[in-house]
Length: 322
Picture (cartoon, rainbow, N blue to C red):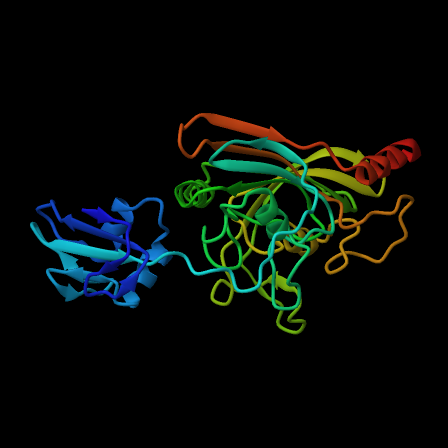
């Protein structure tokens, strides 16, 4: 039974949705896991928030995430409407749209555009632009980053996908986690790698001294990270590398490249302060391709983004010098 109208149902009053289900399986299962399977448009974190707030009952008793469900149990889930975003406002910021339908939008992000707001950066972000372009995004995926499936650093350019519904968001995030989605980057690094290809494995965590940076740290203090790379082109004292990610840690490619002694050109945090023949608006790192299964139809899709003009001019300059 679903009732999206205003209710007085023992959970409280107001607009929302009441879902009543019967557990049909002979073997027990945790309450939170089963509810996620029944409501795939909701993330597990959001389901757990509903449980923690006392919005889920099992046989009339307030449930907990670990409550075991048994055959015939009655589960009631009260879902209040999404809370309004605290200070986000739509802003008419131009977007370079590579693809869009009613479920997702794929963008070519420019350098200098932060993906989502933070306390010291409350506007002028990709999220502000998306709220203007897609008015239905508020409430999708959390307060501060509606619809955001994955992120790119402020000065990293290229392909990024955004979900336009909660169901699409959850399914796309699963593809990222299970490496069904593929992400390819092109990056220009200082120096020449000794091999033609390789894999960098190193846990990433906060830098032990400079808290604004990340670093390769011990497995106990960081999160597992794996980056595959291969040389696309050797350009004198530089090399153009193609990267594929198994994980998506903050600053992962930048940290891993610096760790092996080949930092990304133009990187203000992990790079070398060297004068370049062509000025770059950020580091020379570009998300060149994105592959994914459409979250509703399952169709395999691939999107590509051309190198930004300054990045391309720098490569042409280096080629002339070789």
